[in-house]
Length: 329
Ligand SMILES: NC(=O)C[C@H](N)C(=O)O
Image (tube, rainbow, N blue to C red):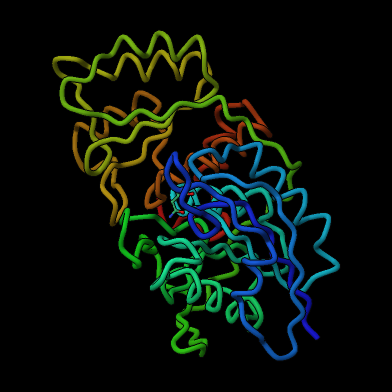
């Protein structure tokens, strides 16, 4: 008999209509009743929290990670039901915190509440259970609309449709069609395993560049945060004319604050040395992270900064592939 633990956290999947709009309210017993019977699987359920995922915080990822670690030996696999809005962040957070985990951890949720006609929740629960109970892979995965994605590569790309998540810059691991699991891709196992304390440093800032962005903010950041992520244009470019950001990046770098450069473009990653507008950013100390997505960069930087504030070590760790998050820098 396979033992699987379902941890519930809230989200639309557990929501009901209230006078303030949809809010989580379904009991765990109701949620678990929708998984359906699976031969040779014994499901247990435990509520971890009951939140719209917009209210999830890094402390909640830590609670989940601590729980998963504590229950690891007692179960063969884990399913986490979760709101979709920040599911990709939680999946990435758990991917780093538990990058040495030897069991599957499967996150799922829905766009429409469980008890509403035509909901996608029932399919997603079934598919999550099919994958969790049949896969031989370990680590964190997100299952949605029949697709299985690596936890560090899944991104929510639609607010309403059922095909709400995509695997960005990485193949889909598997799909589930009519209850049958089809494995498409076996992730490489050459990623580094970095066993760490369960800790995160949320004192970071994400800056989305836009034409006309003021550079005064950098003075504030230098005094207040431990790390900065800049969503650059295209291949890593930022302005060095007009409102020039290069001195701001130099200032942060000189203060020992790592400045991670990601891109606002969803696909194909960045090549920071391709253009002058990128090379100047790199020369100023900007740390490119290739084809990682912002959700994963946020979680990884919080995790890395909890282990070290040394800027050079932060650079090496950010650019080291962990949990399939990165193919090139
Ligand atoms: N579909 C959803 O789950 C959205 C909801 N606001 C949540 O993230 O909790």
